[in-house]
Length: 211
Length: 211
DNA sequence: TTAAACCTACCGATTACTCGGTATTTTTAA
DNA sequence: TTAAAAATACCGAGTAATCGGTAGGTTTAA
Image 1 (cartoon, rainbow over the protein chains, first blue to last red):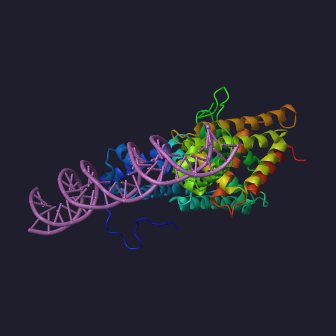
Image 2: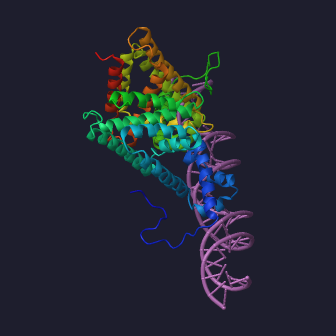
């Protein structure tokens, strides 16, 4: 699907040994997230990121040979992290909806990460942005997963069979993205968790799932 | 509210005469929109915009002395355009909701403009972005306007008095923003107008306004 | 005639990235 | 256990390209 930058292509890359460099790489990734949250990907200077972790620019480039590699490393890490959450909340529809609220609650304490990904998300709409494919794949996958959960609820006779699963999935994702943007714009005054709870509450009620 | 860069500060700027330069400035603004839609504001090069309209870089800078001036001119133009629409659809709640669908229908034919503003919107979350104040003011104003319409519907006895106007306003705006992002990511496969119609339809029904 | 429109030539700052090396660890083998 | 071997971790000093903006002038049009 997406380009692989330096992964193994089939046979084990016997190179890449682990060392204290692993901790350095982790430091770099979190520093990069912070910078991307402030300046976006295109505008952030990897030289600044290097200085943030007490490294020279070539020192950072030793770990991530190009700026794009650094970005892709962040996205790959996100893939790993979200894999847990996704799997955990895919059971039933009302579980998924409540899981989304839980995610929001957690996100409310990680504003920098959330902002970084929100900016990256919009940036990836640009012409030849290196994260374009990743964000498209992520959006598509998300919609399919959520829609599948709606479908399962229909199959189990939990909700009306006339429900448009794909539309409902898209709408849920849209609400989440939109609420997150409003919150990022004005974190102190806007309650995105409450906003999502209200939406989910009315949705559950209208689906007849309120217990 | 927002910073003024070169507007009149009270007395009429007696300078600034109109000429064929006006058409040039209009050309520049649309060219800039196209570039911002492709590369964002920070990453777009005003030299490219200049070439797009057959001008040298200093030629463009004659009309807009700095890159920020160019951005603010676009935002000011947007203010003028949206003023019409806002006023036109502020009557009653169901009129407003249907007006939103109409706006979406129109936006579906202006993908470049929509993308430019979506990217600008996210970019303006960055640290010292020159459009930060404008987008915050716009978001706040929008929420207040929509919430006021809900309030009026309550006062007129059209909808339940327990309705949380501000929350409903935020949710509507969130849905619109979110659907627009999904559409921008995949314009051929995602139907944002249909998505908004579905949401508005269910909202009207649940408010008891369906006629 | 006079201001606006526009150009060529240039500048200083920034940026991602390279080169050629040294220092630091870890692996390996005697 | 230890010391050579090898890979990794880093750095100082560039470099080529890009970009926003300026200086100072000529052309165009009201």
